Image (spheres, rainbow, N blue to C red):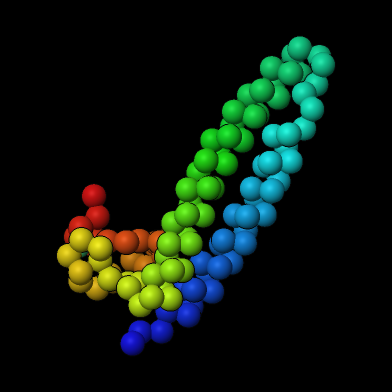
Amino acid sequence: MTDFSQFSESLKARLAALEARLVTLDAETTQRLDTDSEERANELEDLATNEGLETAAVSELGQIRAALDRIKDGSYGHCSKCGGRIAEARLIALPTATTCINCAT
Ligand SMILES: [Zn+2]
């Protein structure tokens, strides 16, 4: 059995970083808006940006948790489409990859 502990460690580190990022984004998003209208327009723009970042972070969190689950149940590193092995270089570049390079669309 291949040892995926290095991937597990880096995925967990990424997970912790994303969770910390989400806490920061949440804090910024719930900040009271400035009463000055020009400032408020800028802040609303920031909030829209934050929401986009938050959505991306939440979706990545889900992928990382799924990858950690696959490491646990032994299906990590196997392509979900053809069942073949996912090349280690691909996993290093994209630890949350669920398909091999041939099946990736
Ligand atoms: Zn495949």
